[in-house]
Image (cartoon, rainbow, N blue to C red):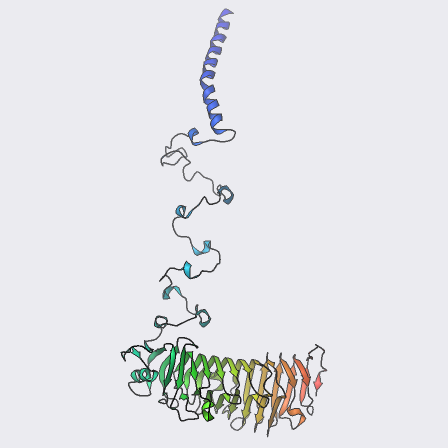
Length: 468
């Protein structure tokens, strides 16, 4: 009995001793970490195998952090700075946003960074420099400064002569003549109809580069016969462009305006002729300003009508005239705006349309007039021609469809807004007029030659379907 008491006493002494040793450590651990926390002092030194990194100090070994354990909510605002980010951040990690010039380092966007067609004309403003013209085999500069007459010239005619070696023909790889800002009066009568000259004349801007041809004798002192293969771009042309025989050519992004002084025939501006046949010719994004009553576009006898492109044309004071079409291939006009005309003018004139073909065709989409012109379409000495008008706003004063010495023609208007539905005001209609799904300000009956289907007036009241 006494031995058992001594044994238990010894055990209590051991427990007391151990407790005395552990109590300070436990108190220290709790004091440093608090409930549910462990600081670095409580983690043994890194040994590379126990779940800690092998870097200086203590920590948790890479690979021992559970996936998605550190979320955005665990990172304090501003805790990750540029210095903490290494390597490449792919484009998929960046949201869609724009960049301004200050975001892009000089020289960092090269030709290799641009995909085909990714930069169109609408993305380019200001001066187009020589460095932008890498697609040409050679670029010549015309400017007002010192010229070496090899790569730089003081006149457009001198540059043309150099490329053609003093002939009016050049069929080599395409070159460009870049014309710096200024007014350049140049004799451009060296080209004959259809002669090839595979060169583009490019200005720095419509307002900066102005070309005034002088010395012409055909129609106007201020005229130029555009050769096959030539394009005029991004400039102002003061005068008349003769398109006779031109193939694979055109005028893009150009203002064609009357040259001062506007006296006699010299008042003409725009585009004229076309016979012999023109082919693959483009007039696009062009402003044409003429004296009121003149023709802005006057084409004669073309036989490749379906290869001609008339798009995005603004006309002030002038008209469009088609004479003697050779085939039934359609003429197509898109996005044409007329303004500044007069009550005795028509938007379109069509003469002798059936002289060479039985069914000449004209397809006209998205045309607009401002109410200053008297007539829409004028037919003269024409039969069996077909005019289709779609998605247009035609505000005219007197007649939509009129003419003289013409009959048995056909005109349709669809999805449009027109001020007057009329056909020569009831006197010898030039043909039948059919209008569908359109708004009409006024209907003037004309011997049952006007047919309306699903049309309504300015108050959106329906017109009765039928003949008027």
